[in-house]
Amino acid sequence: MKNTVAFLLMSFALVLPSVARAKLAEKVIYSFVGGGSGATTTGILTLDQAGNLYGVAAGAGTGLNGVVFKLTPTKAGRWTKTDLYRFAGGTDGSGPAAGVIFDKAGNLYGVTSGGGSGGSGTVFELKPGKNGHWTKKILYSFTGASDGGSPDSVLIFDNASNLYGTTPSGGSGDNGTVFELTRGQSGRWREKVLHAFQGSTDGAQPLLAGVIFDGAGNLYGTTELGGKYGIGTVFELSLKGGNWTETILHAFRGSPDGRNPAAGLVLAGGNLYGTTYSGGSSACGVDNGCGTVFQLEPNGAKWKETIIHSFEGKDGIETFATPVFDQAGNLYGTTFEGGSGLCSVCGTAFELTPTANGKWRETVLHDFGSRLGDAGTPESGVILNQSGKLFGTTVLGGKNNAGAVYQITP
Image 1 (cartoon, one colour):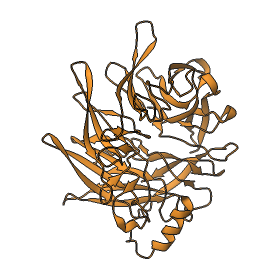
Image 2 (cartoon, helix red, strand yellow):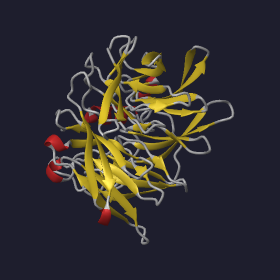
Image 3 (spheres, rainbow, N blue to C red):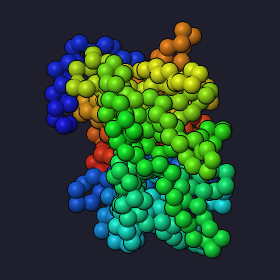
Image 4 (tube, rainbow, N blue to C red):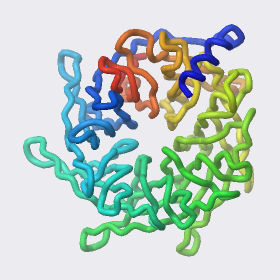
């Protein structure tokens, strides 16, 4: 696939429009060592109040079963990496995915896509102790059957400290689930499937997409497949009479609409924003389109979709990243491939700025692979700290071409 994309980019380079590019400082702050395959998959990062970064690396550590790591900035401007936990595989879990989140007490929560007593992934908790030691506890092990399997999305809490997430497989239709984990009085956690996707006009396979809440307690997410046209949906789950009811807010149709959303959503100003890794403008010259950023606006009982940007190759191809807003209302994200770096298919970091006429102006902040040892092919999105610096991870690139953590300074 990558060779095909590279050929198409070279073939259509002369017809692609010019792309605005900002001259921002990007640097790799950590390069993963890698394992036998030389590649390490990483997810979204999390910041604590002290400015430390936390994340997961699926192909690192003991037996390449993955680690949860911490990066600490030093006075010299460097970053020191510490592995908080190394997964052992088997019943311990393997392949930590998506990223980790904090609770109010400073504990970390995440998922593994494999391992556990059921063999189909876990939800885990890491509790900090003395001398920097963290203790892991498995809250739930998936079986891959009706309870779901192979979770690979970021978790969220509700106000009662219950956990919510998705699985791309399992469930009554084996098309994935939305699940809730509730802590009982004994301290044990109970899993409940809120919705099992059935495919067809219902969604199917929430790929890397978790769910988000609105202020009324409704849940929103995406599925990569399913829907009226079979190429993905945006859905809402509403709690009514003790049961969760699903509503399909949008079924993607393909170019010029998006297709195959893989990432989660963000809610801003009452509108939903997300990305698709294909679809959009036919001008990019790649089969099925280069992907989109979309907006869904409530319009009475329905939702109106607007494509606010279609990628066209030089500005990126395929985004698997959930977008993020800054306080000024600008939208940031990454593309997995494309761009104008030396490798030409290493992806980009981009910004979308709303304009007075209701449109959005795109700026490429960085072309990955622009120099030897640069980060490359970001699968996850970015986070912003209080000073506006962007941080993210890439699957490849870095000093060892095994993935990297990068920083972009405005």
